[in-house]
Length: 178
Image 1: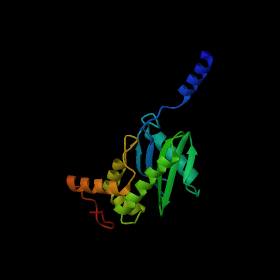
Image 2: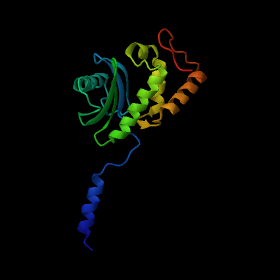
Image 3: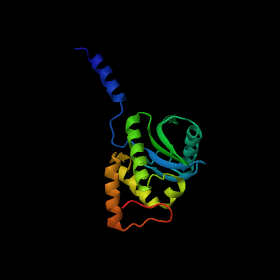
Image 4: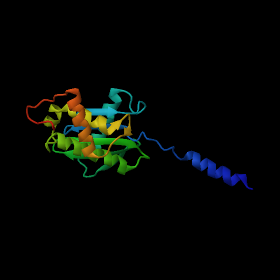
């Protein structure tokens, strides 16, 4: 038997990346000037300092804020994004990550926040309800692992956690779902 063929196949297999549950490298929301409103980085080796993170966010914003796409590739990362009035929502994964998986996270985030913010997905309303925004992000992603991609399930969990922990958001202009 020719072991050389097996060795070639074996080395090819070793080049393939091991599957991982850690699909999301970062999630961030920027305003229409590119300023950070929320960010969560899940990989400690992926831009470990605040300066590196903000520089990456600036580069992403500069590449995407005038584009009419939903996906970008920058600095070896796959980035899916969506805009709403004066907000930019981003989900970042590695270059090998499935864009559809990242897009499902982005859509879940956007739809969940749209419900919580009573379809008023804009900067002021988002800032008025940051407690709920962080709860939503934490229900969708934990440590880079996608936990949920169904907005209705996220809303049920957030609603339960809000009641259970007595988190009372600011009600001045936008109302939190109960």
